[in-house]
Image 1 (cartoon, helix red, strand yellow):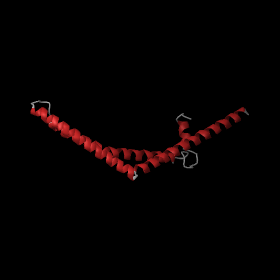
Image 2 (cartoon, one colour):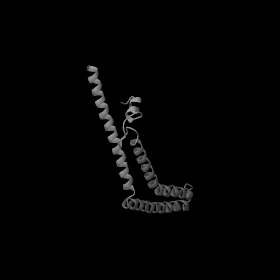
Image 3 (cartoon, rainbow, N blue to C red):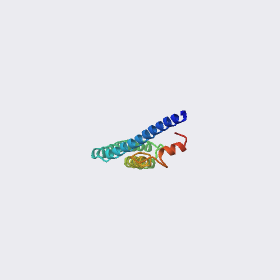
Image 4 (cartoon, rainbow, N blue to C red):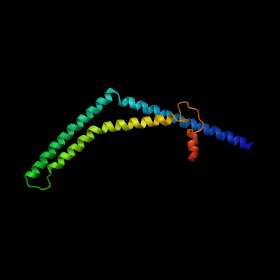
Length: 145
């Protein structure tokens, strides 16, 4: 009788934990999906373009100051003044300013797609029945459950 009660309680807790895991996976997938929609809103796209323009403007000011400084040093006969390094640094800075928003958006979309795919696994949410190969079975195999 005690073994039956223990098994019933264990099964009850396993079902609760499995349901909680399913709920969290679905919730995270839905939040990620909302984030992708927000990233594609016109106001966010315009803000990214504005930030890139501001970055290019600041870069222009810094490059102007650096060029003037290098010109004065080179004119004074300083050997350290190397104008070629400025061009390489400008190219790197422009590449970062222009590519980082695209990289962040791409990685966020990839992460959201991955979360949705994990949530669609058997026993991983979206109403799929728990069975062989379910998330609960994977956690048991990894000794996490």
